[in-house]
Image 1 (cartoon, helix red, strand yellow):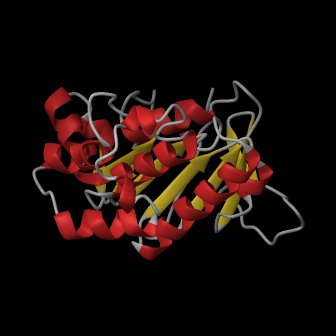
Image 2 (cartoon, rainbow, N blue to C red):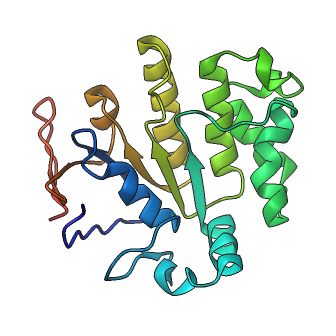
Length: 213
């Protein structure tokens, strides 16, 4: 259960959140994404209230399409699409496909040569890079990543997490990452710990970190 939790982010900032299993990390992301509604308080993304939009399913769907990108641990890609069409999917829903921007994202993520490949033929790391590109291709204000490297081996996890943070910085996109990995968490501008429903400063590798309490 979250306890009077408060979190403010700046445009282009990256934040990592760690905590014990079951402490509410995924619930926090679900609240920010509008999949769940808080008992009290408000959630603002890009100065728009998710709570006030949440009573209307079309409004909250439109809100997500306009403002959010989500990177799932299980990738959530479509087997019937190739890499290009998977990445373009969110932008097509929004109606703002920008071919040149998608090409640039795929090149930065090292998957441009895989554009026409079936998703099923790609490795786990390549699929997660496609998932990152899909989350960014419609230029969201905020990207939420739930254990984005949880299904990857250590070497691939390091490469993919570097690309996630670097791409969000390059596009000036705010990033909130839930992770069990210290190696991933320390890459964020701010590393936080969710403990007893409250966000606290995390101490990882003696890094200088700030608090959201």
